[in-house]
Length: 105
Image 1 (cartoon, one colour):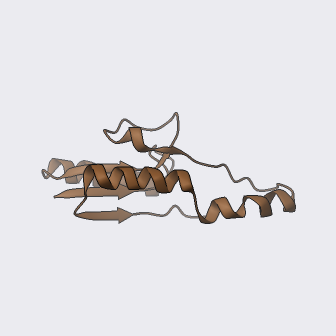
Image 2: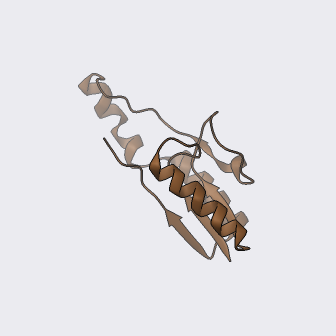
Image 3: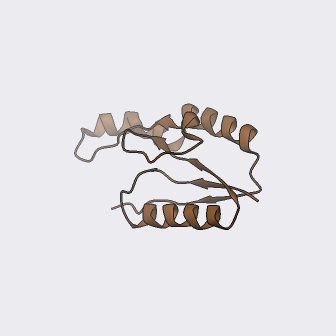
């Protein structure tokens, strides 16, 4: 089976990423083909699908309210991420996808 794992980060940032990497390892060990989709970052672990990863935007607390408001559309939709996902879906054609969401604190 071809499995697509989707997470915000492809590096060990916290517990969600630990589970994401464990799941990837377990699925691969069971003979499944695993692809990853996350934001591009210098800290990313190696992945055969790293070529489709897109740079994410940084949303920082404490920014001026107008700057936060201007960034809102990018938090809702990213054309870069959409293009990367479309490319990955065409290339991998997964049977199933598992999407994780990091905890917002």
